[in-house]
Length: 143
Image 1 (cartoon, rainbow, N blue to C red):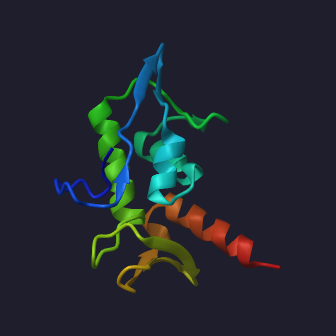
Image 2 (image 1 turned 90 degrees about the horizontal axis):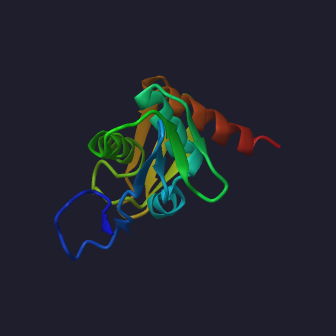
């Protein structure tokens, strides 16, 4: 287990499993994506779409919880992509805790922090994944 915000604080309570990466032929598999998404409090589908856009490749989820990425990608590069996702869509910009909930607000999505109450607005046009999440949340709210 490692700290979600990548700090070296041994008493930090927000943890996620280490990336379990395996290489098969011309694919990269993250075996424990289901556990990682659960610890981050985000859907595996969001992380999958993030990797597809950031790595410019085809990515799919298996029913058992593994994520398959086309091509062989360096573990450090995959970790860096996941860190960017965490910084943008998981951690609160004020307190740095991952106790955030994604909510839809007109042309933005908001990260509402349950720890400090901060409301961070992220513009929909910032990343294609943000637009996708915004659309998904808005569809759920319609009767």
